[in-house]
Length: 463
Image 1 (cartoon, one colour):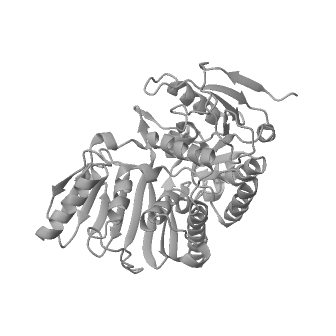
Image 2 (cartoon, one colour):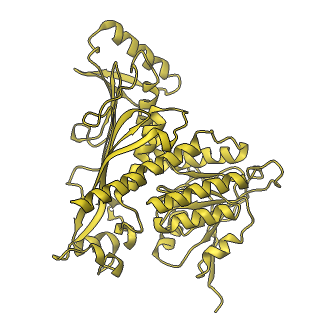
Image 3 (cartoon, one colour):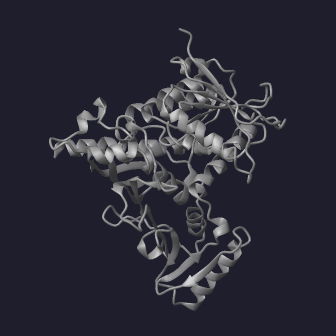
């Protein structure tokens, strides 16, 4: 039987004629297409919240049939209703069983966006790069040691074929993280980064998340495989990707990190979040556990979801602690939290997002020198200088130092940051100017998380 093909033309509009280079000077220039490959996670649609010069307005979608692609197309249709900025994507959708092979037959030089089942991601990345496509992948690009090896090979082939391979690190564009990095670059405010110890790390990044969330008053539906660590990946290799990336990007700006010599994972552990069948049903819409989850169901019929992990590691001599926790549901009035500490010789830069902050992230400068008038004037002058780049910044004094007051105009929501990543990626494609440190540092990041998983599993097996 001929594979089913369906087309959805949402809104047709004239597209820009701006041309982008596909990574080499000798390739014929033309408007590129976005290709959505098996968009199983809602992040797949978030790069389409705006239009991009040089990108054709028709998105080519190659995917198996199922609820995930329906949600993806619904998101695109919803974006097409917005006016600020105006969006007019059309979609050309192929849902045959040979969707991957059909995608690989597309002309080279387009951009494949991959966000979905992480078990398949290593294969999707390798084959897309081999076909001469640029790849923008949601995190994580590797969920275990085997997929890390595959990622290494993919980066090598991308270099050989002169195409770009990049992951979506939105948290670099979150304003508190950005300012934490800016302040860490000021030696008269921050000093130098302390080395710390395993017992008292100088860099700490912790995050707490929740499976059940309300969006517009309705429970967000997650794919059934989302709670299977063999498909989604354990928590220790998933959300921690952002945290490890921020450690590298903040503490060692524009420095190359060599994973073989600069990183050592000192300790790691993993643990499960218990989930009843009713709870599972509430977030997935499924009325029974699929067979692939039976391995994680305890004798009392409780699903054990390995979404939590923590590890201590040393990076270029600096001790860091990373942890991620997934609870089922946040208590009423609370939400996800993020904590980030950088301890310098003059001050600590801390992001808190707890009850005191009404569960909104707040950046602090804390120092024993905060009562010294000379140091105070220095901090105030440095913040004043930053207002030229970040208008509206100010300081609020407290007993330990200062809260950095950030205007709402600078505080973009998480979903809005995906466009920032896409714009950066397009610049790398257009100018072939990805910084030399980006690829080795992506490898260092995924080496760190996958090594932490291996150590955590080994530790658990010995207990």
